[in-house]
Image 1 (cartoon, rainbow, N blue to C red):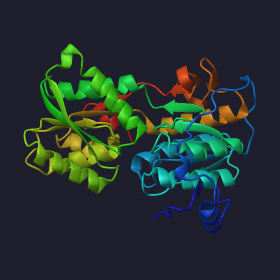
Image 2 (image 1 turned 45 degrees about the vertical axis):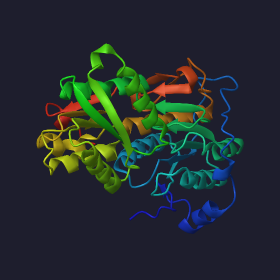
Image 3 (image 1 turned 45 degrees about the horizontal axis):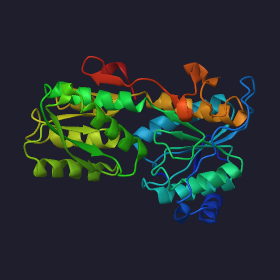
Image 4 (image 1 turned 60 degrees about the vertical axis):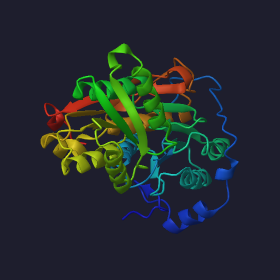
Length: 355
C-alpha cells in the first residue's frame, strides 16, 4: 500500500522522513481560502524558448490510489521523463482540499518548478497555490481546475462532455424517462461543470421527456458510491437510468446493478475506463459510456507545465506549443488547453482500448 505522505518519484530524490517534515511544516492553510485570485498571463511568450533539463514537476491528483488518477499521472510521468525532468506525485488517500493544501505546501518548500493539480475545491487550494507561484512554481490545472491556475488542461470542452452524457442516456432510454446523477464530491469543479452543462442541454426540445430527478455524491469512494447507487434505487424504485461522470462512480453503479433485479431495467452510463467497464459491457449491464484518453491528459499536462515554466507560453489565448507525440496545441480562452472530444465505448470497440 502506498504511504499517503510519501511522494512517488521516478527517481528517489528525497526520503519519506524529509517529506513528512516538509508536509508538517507551516505554509498556507485551508483557513486562508478567501483569497483565490490567479496571476493571469504576464510577460511575452517565446515559442522558441528551450525547456531546461531537470525541471521539478509535481503532480497532485484529487487522491492517490484512484485507478483513473493512476493512469493520468502515468502519462504525466512519461512526459516528464521525455523532458529529462524530475517527476513527483504527491497527495493523500482522501479527496479533500485540506489534504491538497498540505501537499502544495510540501511541493513549494521542495522548490517545485511546476505544480500540476486536479483541485478538490476551486478556491480552498488557491492561497497555497498562490504562495507556491510566489516561490517560483508555474501552476497548471488538469482534470478539475482551481480558480487561480496559470493554464488549465481540460480533458474536453465542458459543453461536449455534458452533451455526450445526455445523448448517451437519452439513446438508452429512447428519449423518455427519469434518471439521476451519481457524482464524485460536491465541490469537484469538473463534476459540477459537466452536470451544469447537462442541465443546459436538457433544456433543448429534443430532451423534453427526460427528467433529472436527483444528484448524489459517492465522494469518489467505491463503497460510498455503491451505497449511493443502492440508495437511489430505494428512493426512486422506478428510476430508469443513472449517469455517473466519474470513473469510480460508474464502476460502482454498474457493479450494483449487475447483481441486482435492476439489471436490464436501469441504464448505467457516464465516464469510465474501458478496463474497468469491460466486464459490465460484456455482461449487458452497460450499453455504452465515454471518456477521453486519461494517459494523454496527464501527458499533455506535463508538457504544458514545462512550456509554461520555460516561457514558450504565458497562458494567453492564441499561444501555441508542442506536446511531444501529441503534436501542437493552442491556448484557448481563459488559459484553457483542450485535449479533444470524448470517445464513446461500447461492445463494438471496447476491446480496441487497454487503459
